[in-house]
Length: 302
Image (tube, rainbow, N blue to C red):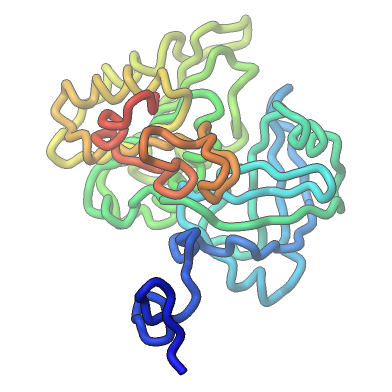
């Protein structure tokens, strides 16, 4: 017997067959799957940041877990909560995942007190990514300010490991002072990669600093660019986007070839809590990586 509800045949109507996905979960990966993981190594970077190396416990899960540069995971401290963290390791590395974590809240403060061997959970990966595949055959600018080097590290790995596929590669990095520099043990490694130029500046030098002093825009202004053949990835505080991207735009680099990460707006990773909303856009789902043209058309995004 056919059941009728207000004139609608709910046994035959195509729109009512199967399970209705009210949450549009098809847009997300591994929403509920929690990868049990172990912190294997903790490297202090600054007074505020540490690099955590995590290993997924299950061999099969570890072998199949993958991500693209610019994506993030939800990192859970059982019993206390979880936080969104951009992945800082190489996408080709299946042995472990690296997360650079700033001590800023309850969960991150707990993580800074952890020791190797601590158990955590991972969900993800989530979000959009930097289109490094689209950049092949072109010059690439990799620009970071402060903590922005953490999400930029994954595309740096991706590009330097496939160096022959790209044109000239410039890495520009700036911080407030030398004490805030991240991953300083890797600078010489990046410089030794053929065709990669690394420039670093601090706003305020100390007695031991021998490098450039000034804003990161000063490094950019001195750079020779082929605007028609350049892509840019920019990570850092949102105020930096306007200064860097406006300079690139003034020099002829199209806004749809500049990519920024709005990672600071990420929260639940699923677009449910609405804390990441910018207008009609959920940063957790539609981002965190956007081209700069899209960012300029999102009210109050930066």
